[in-house]
Amino acid sequence: MTDLFDNETPDFTNPLGLLRACHDRILAQCETLEKLVTHLRSNDVDAEAKTAAQRVHRYFSEAAPLHHQDEEVDLFPVLQRQSLKMADLVYSLKQEHPELDAAWEQLAPTLVRLDQLQDIDDFSGQVADFCERYRKHVKRENDELLEIAQHILSSKQQAALGEAMEERRRPQIRGEE
Image (tube, rainbow, N blue to C red):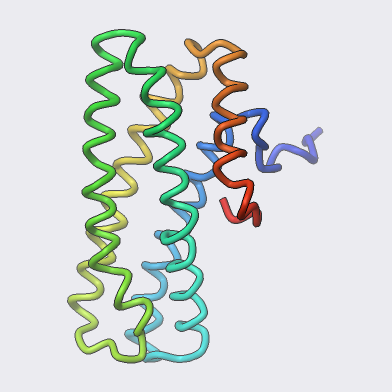
């Protein structure tokens, strides 16, 4: 028998599950970006393309920065004190965030002004680079960081993480992440 609640998004009482769910949304947004490139090659810029571009832009401009803050401000500091190996992993992942942000900064203006797109091949290359970077980053965070965090963080530490994540979103809780 299938549990009807298997696909429910975790809430702030399960912060590590919520971070994984956010990773799933990031990957879904990358898929949308890739489909957008294909769509633009076939249909040029139409209402559907503009809507997809706006949604991706909103997600990576609003929800993704909160996700990075969750990790950098609340999760990483706790984990890096666990061991030298974990400290190295945290350091490496933290270094990737500005790289992801820089890739986003290159891509974002095109999404805002999609109807002014001049070079689909350049845009396609930016999308491919951005999505590849995010996929690798998310895989490392899911497979290495969150997998270990699940076993080493106490319930009290997880509760504190969830409370901090909720507080960060309190003025703007919209169900986006």
